[in-house]
Image 1 (cartoon, rainbow, N blue to C red):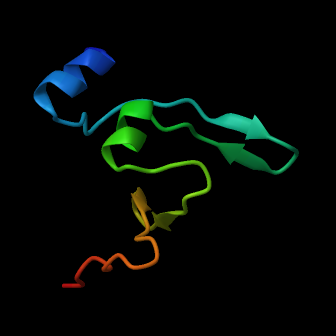
Image 2: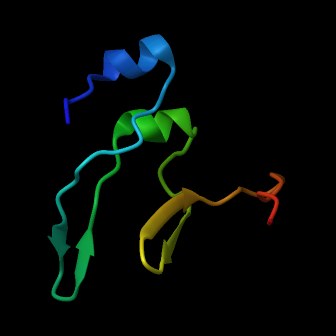
Length: 75
């Protein structure tokens, strides 16, 4: 997959939907993964915001609505 530059995301206002990230070891029993800054900016997230991680056959990471924001409708 070709690497996307930040400028590509800004110019067309589209978010890449697939990227590869490397797991980082944090302490003895945990791992972390970083998210592209463009994604954080696009979703208007900031330090301390909470993300929800759903693990089943896949791993899904999504932003949780903040106070005063409507939750996503459930189907």
